Length: 371
Image 1 (tube, one colour):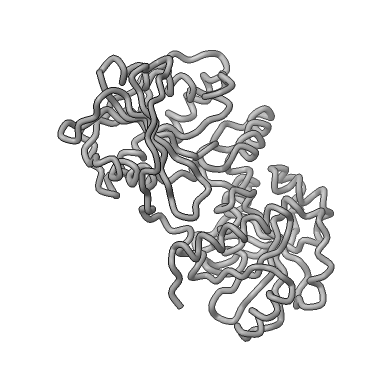
Image 2: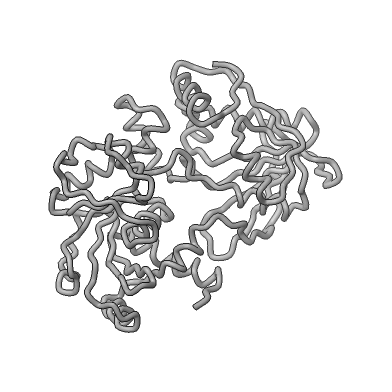
């Protein structure tokens, strides 16, 4: 069965709300296997009403990043891991998935799981809704898909098939259209406009700041800036995001024109709550990369296909890109945006972000000129 992008996005919205309330979702692998999953970070919310239909007690699903950060071996063909949830109480589950690997016993019954298995689907889905990618899974006894659908309807929970999850999470260029443009004088760039974009059935609101007069015939100065509430709004000294935002706008004003794409990708797209959880782990001594891994996330969860779609909606295909991040160049190129020139952003450090910037240079490939 083929699903439209709109159908899947609308279903995903319902699934996201269910998981964020601590509710359950039925997932199906297309081979008869089905299970009920909940977000492990809401493990204290009881699920007694599912016990009669499950063929197993709850299993805790953890990502490869979780396990590697806990010092466990991760075979190449394993996608994620499961361990009996009864090994832990609810408080221990919460502490474990938030980074306390000492709670995972050395002799725990840990099983590696293949790609596209129910545990793998569960972790991928939770990552997509920006929850900690750790799930509580109960496999169910019913194998007939029609019976599974009726069961889910009776439980009043949504159903997600593997094909839908794959469609939802694959990196593809989104539909993007301009919704409205308005004048927005800024302190760093008085001659500026804001352009809001519409993405069908998506809650994320990306926007562009156009500085000066943009000509499609001349590659404009462009900055891809991922949302950072702590840096952009609060003036945090832990990162360089706020400085980069203002420096980019100032350089565009000085150059006479430019485009800043402001992307709704807080915390390298793990969300504000999880970013602050990562900050707490950094307080305990981890760097920005290891903190993400300890929560089960990848080093950087962002994709820049929305930025490519925004540029195309603006009629732009060739740009001069302001960035220290080579991943932005490669991702934009994949979607048909030609980067004619990379322009680095060199900004002063402070005692609070010095190690953060060293980590970006040493571990994430950022092309930072100074230490």
